[in-house]
Length: 359
Ligand SMILES: Nc1ncnc2c1ncn2[C@@H]1O[C@H](COP(=O)(O)OP(=O)(O)OP(=O)(O)O)[C@@H](O)[C@H]1O
Image 1: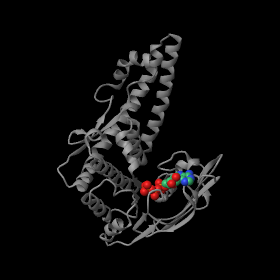
Image 2: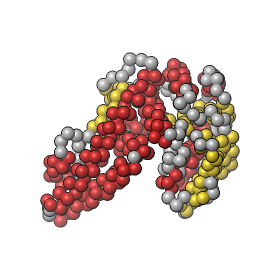
Image 3: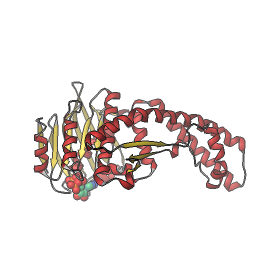
Image 4: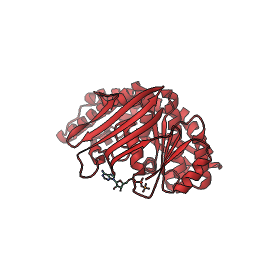
C-alpha cells in the first residue's frame, strides 16, 4: 500500500498544496502550527473519510471558504487507486474511488489500511471507557462483520430497554415479562460480544506487550485487564440483579456497553502512575499492535502516520521506534516533527529512501 501523491484545496490551513511522496519515509517538519498534522490528517481523511482530529467535517474546511477537496493517488496490489474526498457547507461529504462516487461511505473503510499514532491518542488513557471500547471494537470489527452486526443490534436493543425503563419510571408501572424479553436478547448478544472481546484480547495483549518491551528496553511490565459485567456469571442473571437499580436510574447499568480496559504499568494504572514518556510508549505499543492486526487481517501492509512521535520520548525510545518501523514488516511512513535536524539525523540512520517536506 503506497501513497504516491496528494493535493489539498481549502483543507484546514491549506489553500492549495501538492505533495509527491517517497515510497518509504516522508517527513513534515516546521514550527508549531504550520500544518504538519493537517497533512497527516488529510491522508487519514482519504482512508476513513473523516478527520482523526475533528469529527465535524465542515470544520475541516479552511476558514472563510465553502468547500475542501483532498485528492490522493494510491497504489495497491500494483493498481492505481484514485481517492477523492470533498465536503461543501450544507451538503453531504462525497467520496470517490477512481471517479465513482460511493453510495455508502462505509464500503470504503478497509480499502486503505492505515494507522495513526498521535498525541491525541492520549484520550485512550485519559478519557472514559467508551474511548477504549471504540478502539477495541474498531480493531475487532475490521475483520469480523458478524461481531459488528451484533454490536449494532445490541445497541439498538439497549436503547429500547432504556426507553422501557424510562416509561416504567414516568408512568409508575412495571412489566416484568416485557423487560425479560430485552434481558434475554441482550444477555445473548452481550455474552457473545464478551466472548469475542476476551478471545481477541488474548491474542492482542501479548503482541502489545512485545512492542512495549521493544520500545522501552526495560523491566517495565504492561498489561491490559478486561473489566466486564458479563463474566462467568449468567448474563441474564446479571441483568436481573440490576433491575431495581436500573428502574431508578432509568437506564441499563450493566452489560457489555459498560466494559472497560484497564491499562496497567507494573500492576498500577498507567493513567495515574505512568510518566508522560511511559504513557506515550504505552500508546505507541497499542497502536503498533493494532497495525500488526490490521496487516494480518487485510493482507496489506498499512500506511503508518507518526504525528509528533518524538515529543516526550527519550532518544533511546525514539531510536527503538524508528528501528522497529524500519523493519520490512512496516511499509510507507509519514512523520511530523518540529525539529528538522533531529528528524533527518534519525531518518538517515535507517538507510532508507526518504523525503523531507519543510512547511
Ligand atoms: N478549518 C481551518 N481553517 C483554517 N486553519 C485551520 C483550520 N483548522 C485548523 N487550522 C489551523 O491549522 C493550524 C494547525 O496545524 P497543525 O495542527 O497541522 O500544526 P502542526 O504543524 O502539526 O503544529 P504542532 O507542531 O504544534 O503540532 C493552526 O494554525 C490552526 O489554526
